Image (cartoon, rainbow, N blue to C red; front, side, top):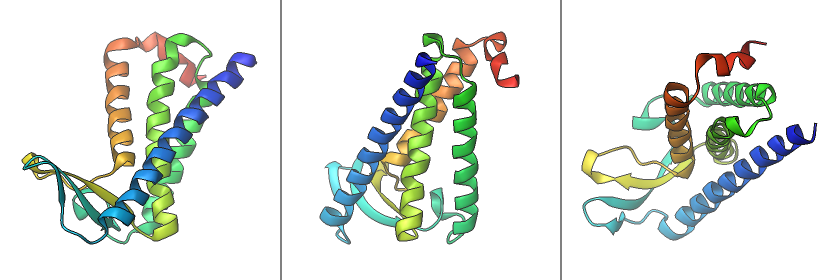
Length: 165
């Protein structure tokens, strides 16, 4: 029982810190960047550039707030369900961390959608003309990528059978 509580505390602390960093960085972007021109961190590579996004990456699904609410809630419930199923074993800490990253990113952007009706984006990577993004997007992307690596290279199928029970 104690290990189970520790797992949830670790998950919640990690997610809370990441959401805090996300919301703080968006606040800083809103107050310091506002509607000004892009601010180069590394000229021709990385910029801070304030943007309000009512859709998803590449501007798709603009204004589809109900869709994003439903998808986000489904993802959050799915992560929490898998967290409850996750064995209390150090071997599964990478999965716990991946879940924390994805959960935090989803919560960070969800807060924006509920409070502002748009997501605050402010990081622009110019060499590939990638859409402007934020810390929550980084959490979701890194968490998903690490999850893919874990499921491909670390865990054998038998080690994931606990999800079927």
